[in-house]
Length: 436
Image (tube, rainbow, N blue to C red):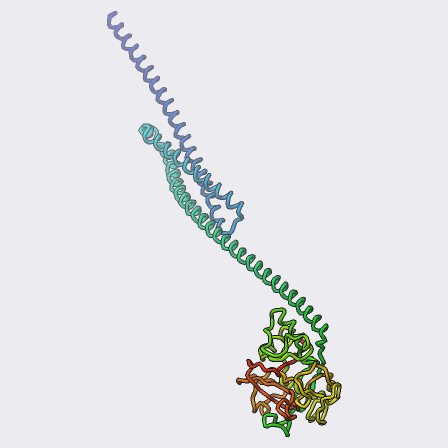
């Protein structure tokens, strides 16, 4: 009996111990479950925080789109830094998310979830949201990469534009410098030329190379009683001009030779000081024109020469009228021609005509601008006429009677010769047209 009671007490003690052990086990499992629930809750909260951070990173990544709308350089640099930081944060968050998933799946904690089914939804929902967030983060990363590529392309284009702008500015500045140098050089050349012309005119005035003013207006050109190429008589209008009062002398021409702008005459007494005030001779048309250009003028046209020679008289034979010429020095109708003996005489040896011009008859024949045409008077324009050719000869006017007749002394007389021909009785005088 006592043995039976002892056995019952032992069994009761074992049951108590088993119940105590079971209670301890249940308490341990409950504690572990609570801890697992806390960890799941923490993981869910961490996943939610990860989702929020990824969403915030995606919003920051949207700043890249503003770059295409023309941000300032400082804003572009700041945006680049934000994008790079977002990429780094995205990579870190993605790594943490993946690590959390691995911990939840591979750590054996998922096996306990069936014990508490009500926790599955709590954990599955954040995990699903985390997966979506990861996909969004990947999409945001691709968008960020695209934005960076667009930024690099935009910066490349902007850099290229800057290079082009700088190159264009360099070209413009270089062109401006060239133009400035050219303008300065032209101005310097003009100043030098003006100084040279002033020196020339001063020297010419010293040598008594004065000019006479011929007023603008009409006159009758030609002669009905002369040679056929002097006809018909026609009305010509000329603008005003200045013409040498004297034929160009040896002394004046020597100044141009000394300057290197004129070639020496081909014959005559050019180098003899005794003939310094005689008209220069043995010059071609080109030499005569070169001298006049050197002085800033030109040879007169045939019409300009004849109007000046007439001295304001209409229809007269000679510069002084219709009286025959004389060899008397200073005579009103004086002229140097064959009856006077010798050759040329100093310029101004006889009285001037009505315009104050000397030796418009006699002494030497004078080159003028025009090409010779025997029929030019028939088609000559009324205003400022000049014969431009074509032709092979240039016109000479007036001159001495070195062949025994007085015809070359007439103001309407015309002679012509090859422009390169140089002769002992061929000279010239120059003209200056205002404004030219």
